[in-house]
Length: 248
Ligand SMILES: CC(C)(COP(=O)(O)OP(=O)(O)OC[C@H]1O[C@@H](n2cnc3c(N)ncnc32)[C@H](O)[C@@H]1OP(=O)(O)O)[C@@H](O)C(=O)NCCC(=O)NCCS
Image (cartoon, rainbow, N blue to C red; front, side, top):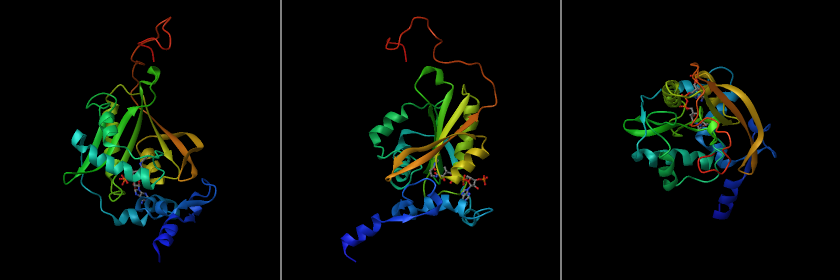
């Protein structure tokens, strides 16, 4: 088969009943359908009862710890795979190392915004993060959380180890709510969030456009059990205006 024909085949769009509710026309790009992680995430829908794929793979021993600047290359590699091959992130462009380094500056080993990595035999195979949910000061007690596992290590408990550690750490901080947006369908991520106490609180229909299709996003919320005093960077200052140097 000639090179042109090969490329044509790779770009072919394939009907997939799994996402027919979500896409118009009812197709997904071949590259996405063939990716290992997409197959895993769809396994949950096509079988009733526990997935055979899941039980066939042994869990991995991982060590979860705060990320260091030396981990940013691995984090970038993990994330950019999902940018290129899946709708699980609705980022359209890969993230550069320069962007990662700046992003890293928003985390600390204490307080609300954390970045954790999971290592297996010294190699970073996943990460989880909590970041500012919205920049306005009143949202300070809310965080947005996310978790990504290297596509060749999914389904072995790494995501659970990372996310449960992150949420346990945040539970000791001044955090009241955590939010996660899950592009549909993603039954593995939904299961992970629900098992750790998140509940679905919203559903945005066709809110994202990627691979030439619209995607729905389910909004998940975790209410931290300890009721803490409502506190933000600053209280309301009568007369302070938007645009004042210290206003947000
Ligand atoms: C979502 C993700 C972080 C989960 O991490 P993981 O290491 O793959 O998941 P785990 O092995 O910890 O399993 C989490 C849950 O999903 C279930 N699960 C895992 N693989 C499964 C499969 N193939 N079929 C059905 N269920 C599966 C597990 O049983 C577990 O639930 P349980 O504890 O009730 O048994 C990971 O798959 C990933 O990075 N996916 C792509 C990126 C993504 O979607 N990130 C989240 C964005 S919101």
